[in-house]
Length: 82
Image 1: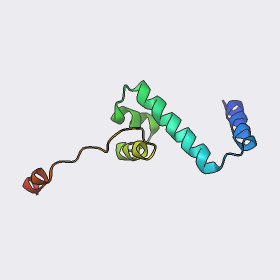
Image 2: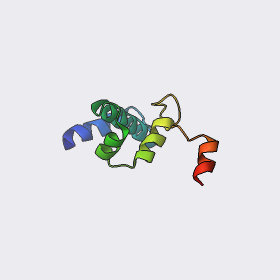
Image 3: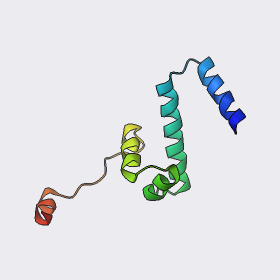
């Protein structure tokens, strides 16, 4: 595994990738594949990735891996709870 990772790092460096680009590619790919493995279940995916579900949702929005932001309760419902 370490040899494969070392080759990947060398390849990224040879192609002129900046750290930020490499991290984005890695995060996007890990999130996408984890969501595929969990059938889109965000709670299960966040557990596999070792991050909070809200962090996963934010990253999904950042990487445009979902079409719309998470639902929020209507204002009237929020006032009724308060």
